[in-house]
Length: 332
Image 1 (cartoon, one colour):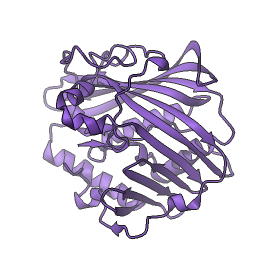
Image 2 (cartoon, rainbow, N blue to C red):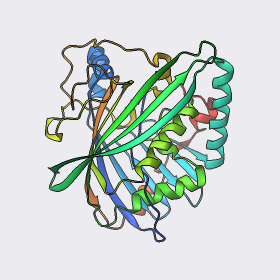
Image 3 (cartoon, rainbow, N blue to C red):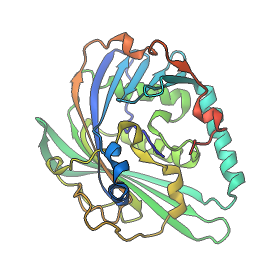
Image 4 (cartoon, helix red, strand yellow):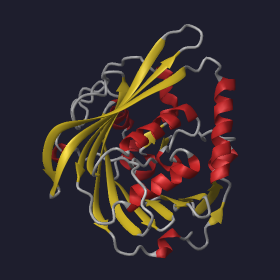
């Protein structure tokens, strides 16, 4: 099942915390996943809806809200609240419960599949020196690369997966620091940022690897106004991104941005041929990648955020968090 995800970088912490908000728009622009969605036909109609997410910070609270679901993180209460507008339900998980769910998932993963490969991560950033004007901002290009290499415990054979994030950074607008500051404070409590790890609750090793990516992102100077993320086998995700003006129109739902990332390791290191020669043209050649997605942020505002946005809608029913219901495993 496709799940929501949020991709935000971590940066330095400031002593004062205020309000800030922006909109994030994501588009599935290529890769095998896009081909599968196209092949799905009727199912792809919903998957191609515009993915627009409002991100807002108000003091110790952060909101990620789409048309169907929302997530509220409260650092003071140390809780993560998930709201499902379609089902009129919500769940509340404490930070301690999140940590326990991750620990249980790790144990279950090892118990269910003792041959799960040991994962090693290498994270790096590179300023390409390229410059471009995007949405009125003067930006420069920085490429963040995460190499994940798994070694089979029995055979000793290894395979790899690579995630390449091609970012165009602009000077920060007033108030933007509230976003990375919030994640910095959250990481101090959790050691990693779970809100950005949508489908990884059943793969703690991958979750920690992505957390390392965000930590590397803390070295970046600026805010990413446009980003292309490619995921695939080693060497398959490294193609350069096309200009933002070439981004396609097919768009996934905000709550369904990723598809079982935890299950991608089943094909770790295996090179797959393109199965859809008529894929929508995305940022660069995505024929060898599993997934390519573009993300753009806009509508920046440092005005006061309405506190009502952080409240649970009246009449919604509280349910058990999915992670606890499944003993730390995702519901299929």
